[in-house]
Length: 337
Image 1: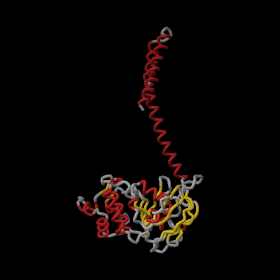
Image 2: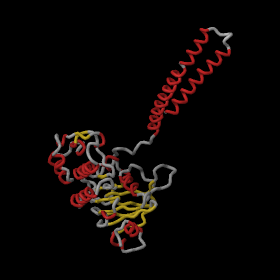
Image 3: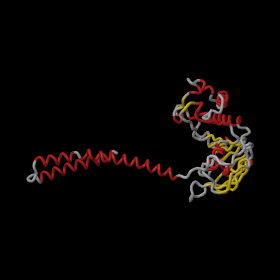
Image 4: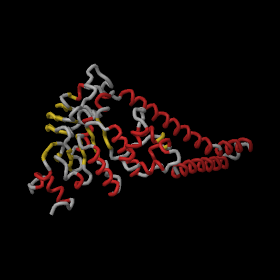
C-alpha cells in the first residue's frame, strides 16, 4: 500500500513538473490564465488518482463477492437430509461397523485417499486409528459422517448401509469429539443442549462427569453464562471439556475421537481419557491417536499407510512383531524398548 501511494505521488508530481516545463517553454503563446488553469488541473490529479484507486479497489471487492455467490450456486449439494428409508429409532443397537472394500476420493479426478478398506468392528470395541501424516486417518472418520461420499464399496452400521440413509438419521446417531473444540455464541446451556432435549439435572450431571461442574457453579449466571463467538472467553481445555460434556449428554452407540486431546495439556488429557473409559464402556469408539500411549489398552489398533489398511489387530499382538509398522511407531515414540 505504501508503494502504491509513492507511485501515485510520483505520477502527480511528474505531471505538475511537465506542466511547468511546457508552460515555460510556451510562455510566449500562453496567457497567465491558461498557465494557471493547467497548473490547477495538474495539482488536482493526485486527488483524482487516489479516488480512482479507491473506486477500483471497492469494485474488485464487490466482484469477489459475486464470484463467491456464483461458486456457491455451482457447488454440488449434499445428499438428502431425510429419505424414505428410516432406520429403527433405537438404531444402532450394537454399534457394529463394517467397511466393505471402501474407497474414498475428495473430488472427481483426484487420487483415492482410502483404498479398499475392509474390516469388521464389533459393537463396543475400542479401536485406535494410527498412521503417518497423510495416511488417511481423518478421511476414514469423515466417511462415517458422509461429509464426502464414498467412491466405491460401502460402510454398514448394524446391517444398515449408511449410503441408503438420510444425513440427519446418520449424523444424529454418531457423536464426534473433534480436535478443535466447537462452541457457539450463546449460553452454556444452549451449547450443551441446543435442541432443549435434556433437563437441568441431566446437564449438571454431564458437567460433573466432564469435571466442569465446579467451574460452571462459580460463574455469575451458571448455565446461562454467555460464551462469546468460538468460546474465546474460555480456555482451550475448558472448551474441550465442554465438548466432552456435550458427548456425554448425547451418548450415542458410536463415538469418534478425532485427536480430541491434541490441543490440551497432559492433565486435561488424563481427565478426558478417564471420562471416556468410565462413561463409554459399551460404546464403539474410533479414536485417531495423537499420543500412542492412550490407545495401548484399546481392543484393537488400525494402522493405515497411504490410504490402505496395512495392520489390524490387538496392540499387544502387533507389538510382538518387530517388523510391524505399529511396533516401529511405538518405538519411535519412546514407548517400547
